[in-house]
Image (cartoon, rainbow, N blue to C red; front, side, top):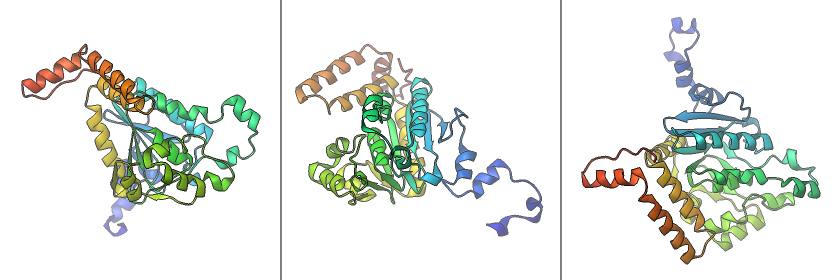
Length: 297
């Protein structure tokens, strides 16, 4: 690459676009140069928009994106800002190529006291992500261990880079998963595999294994992961936002309700859809053989 830079170019500062072209994908330079940040006050994440998609990048590279309390508060803040933004239809959360998130911040929690954890509902704010109405996609490269795996499972769709690794190693630290590792994982991979992963702390899933078990939806080359995930998010963001949110709500309720109650819940939201402008537009466009123009109302 250096041979292609002319002598005159060496005498001039590189432009932003030049810095991006020379930057290694997922490096700090690459992330900063490509980020149209929505809030410059974040210290642990980068928040930006890509058209109708909100993109949140975990950005604690020295700690392999360990999930500190401050980082998670920033993630929640960015998520709820995107949720309230009418121009955003879907959200992507990602990390670096080396680590989506290698777990919770152990240094931060190692001296915690049980009664204080109980009184303050320690890690309770992590579940705020499940209150976001818009679809959230996780783009997982590298390590997604412990809290990192739990964060990915709180998202609605998981895409994995081909070198991604999923696991719950908390048992090796003398503790159990505390943000869904014993609850969401079993629903994705089954009881036996979830028991093996959580009880040994050393049985991790490769990207292909996670795909075969249904934990992730797609596996792509690591350097294409974020773009591929954003592509799907863009497709979702073009749909009627009330309808994508209803779909998300219905599917999530299927984990909480009996089949009879779930079917009734789905049917009631289906009925309510006929009171929206987007239903009239979508069905009229189908009959008229044209593309619909949804107005999210």
